[in-house]
Image (cartoon, rainbow, N blue to C red):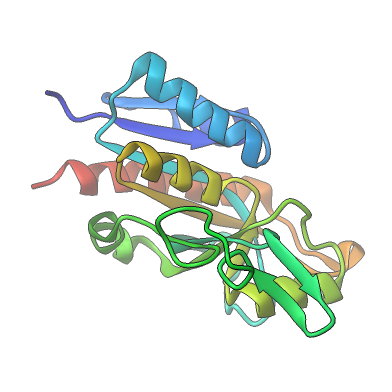
Length: 212
């Protein structure tokens, strides 16, 4: 069977930056966890199977990450930032509450090890937080960074990789840094650079995955 890759983005601008190389199925599934999980599932059912699945898009750099605008992050983990319980003693993730989100530890989904090793040279390998509320204050950015230990935040990765895990497909998240997080009026942005670097990196990733 021919090897095929599913790329799930949030918006069309991200999909357009990647293009449609041979063997690639690209879907702009919408913003957030529900849209991305649905888009991933729908693509697999209607156009699958796929050899590999990639969630690709832009992201905001979290405090003290050392990331600059345009940098690439290859996720070794996708972390649900908000699933859990706030207590007087702090945040408890799903595992600490005595429950499970899936076959992984707490809120942290490991991406495919082989894919991560294969693509590690393309950027910084680090955990990426999946949030429902983006960080528009310094306090919230620090909270996400401290709670998750992640380098950057986006809104879809954990849902895509979680969905892929449930159907047994290797998956990873690739992000290009488009902005800083923290107080909204002080954030730095360069979406054009981020989209350019995202497209270049995802196409390089495809070449790396195709190689023997």
